[in-house]
Length: 202
Image (cartoon, rainbow, N blue to C red; front, top):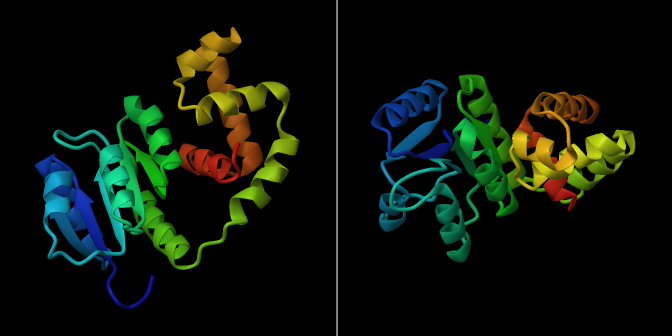
């Protein structure tokens, strides 16, 4: 990151989470503004636009998905990172399709969030539209038919048990195939795998 502090907006209705994330980001040398709801964030017209937005996906009043849609309608191009609980992964996949930079599934480690913010800011500053396509063409060639089916289920936002039912296999087997796909593609996280696929129009 540059020597000038990046400004990150944190939006979460949980006081403890906001305090924890604010402490983490400021300790890492970032500037941080915290908001208790997406509505409060949107209503404050006087705030600086910021370099990145970190938001919970499930909040009262306005969800993270609705926030992303509203920012898009306002022409706000600030990269957004969505934080999701385990059961909200399909919602986070939908958020990726709507243009968020990344999603992190709880619990995540501090370094993962800092890396995601750095990567989101870098990509916003230096977009490379061919990046996903180049990676994906190599990725597809290495996958077996069953791995491709599992990947399609993941990109469709389906939970492991739903993919398992669709394919007539066990959820544990789906996990094995998904792990194989991540190994072959070099994806370090589920969000990276999904984003890579979506960028290439899978």
